[in-house]
Length: 229
Image 1 (spheres, rainbow, N blue to C red):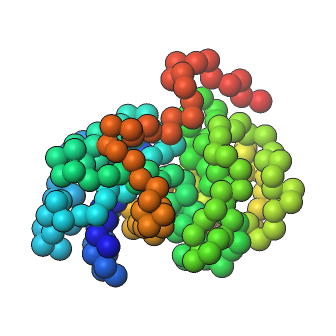
Image 2 (image 1 turned 30 degrees about the horizontal axis):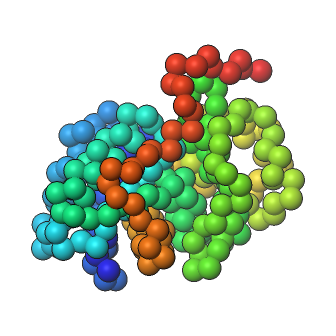
């Protein structure tokens, strides 16, 4: 299988190319540099692997939730490559990719992922370790304030990851007694999009490039922010 994965939903600009069992990746965490970094990174992994875009099976897109502008950058590039090469796109949750890295690198059954959504909120996702250690969603990803997370009452052996815990320490404090460790995995990494994308590709869960719809979660960018408590 030949898959190209990319994600710009966060501070990280991240690209990975899988050719069979081999993975080549580029990953940089530089705010507001994605438009400069993404295409050269894609070109670099393709050239290193001596692969042309036309030879790929699909493009795996980190589809958020995350930065509005960031998600559009990756989506636009993925669409352009897919249209030009006749490829389909595999949208994958960017937070599920963080959970996939947690399960690949730590012994835990549940990952609780938060990313900064601004406006005193986080994007929240809870995932269980599924077959092949791939994350399976416990509940729909959602916006969440700094209150206790109700689902954690019945969750054991959970690890927290994502930048949201650092950005909003009050959220961590209010849920600390129901969490295990907080691991230093802050942003999506494209190599962990790949196994999720491969599973969806094999199940024929792909879309045409014109059908890409980034997971904004917050429909109104300019809505009033939540009041801090």
